[in-house]
View: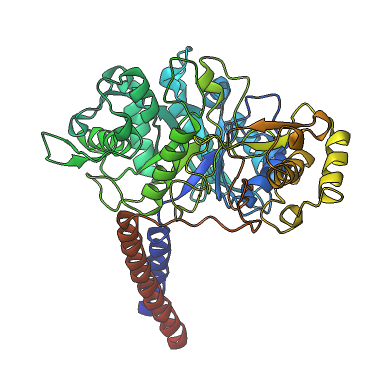
Length: 502
């Protein structure tokens, strides 16, 4: 009996350590409010190419679930606000949905979270009261098939769920939402599910630039904001908003609920009044965000606390209403080329291309394929460039840096630019029968570097020195990793010894 107890204890300890040693993670939101996006199969390939391991979708679309089967990518799926009523009314609706829409694809498709409703306090329809009953029914359905511990249930919220967020220590929930928030928090605490929040420092800066500095919103501030109640120092708005939520939870005595950021990001384009919506600022915010999260920095109130974050969004979505920025949060254009370079590992530097900026400030131009050109014309021009045009097209061959995305327009863009740069960067050199266009934005992405006049032909991987702060954080991260490894080895040894004793 004693041996069996030790075995159970050791196994439980092992599972706990595996969870603790996982570290913070970065995912990406895959919104589909557009009419020009690639098929889910192509999207799954793109996600794997860029080593994105966590994806959030806003529904349970069968084609998407199929596309991510056997990819190893972990999926957060959603139940939309419009479906909350049937899910909250009858347990059978949740049971049927799970049986028909989820179980046929699980576990080949790694579903780890289900969001029940999204930002319901912002919804024009009063659906807040439906959220917790729907969550209970979804959890009950999962419990019936033994998945309630493998798939967590929660709901996402905007920062508007707080009535106060500054200073962070004064963070408090809006009392008008108490009727559904308290039972939800009890649900989350009981089932060890995270409180999901969507955070956008961009909006705080855009709407109040006199009170919020751009550097503070971009993780670039050299000064600190002091919380007068706690003395904690804040160098960025993201941490301050996260801590406001932690303090709001603690004020209601919910101290064990973890926080997960299910949306954050920065737009790359906006209306004339949205001057901060640029590729440079979007790249800066998301790069600094990823590094901040991956290094397990935590926040001033929760130093070293793991924090899972989803960047919004995978693609620009042309059907989203509102200001121009609403349609330009994407990391990728619909043709799967990068809006700007981004390293999802958090190990690279903020500027990922060889140029000093995404948009050239020194008159440098590039030549790419026109989006208006036909597939046939592009293919003929590509064949000419890689043949008689004497362009070295090695980089767009399989397994090479510029092969993905495997599209004619992407391959043609690389070949057109190489020819253009090698032939004096003249207008004629970018003609290609009217199929080439000159741009002043560097089309390089990831390790695919486009030539500029006078540059080497060798395509190298992007490497840049990382700041001493990041190095320090990385060192701390490595120490934590070694501690975890040592603890895991100890537990494994304990399990083996117990096993031999039997």
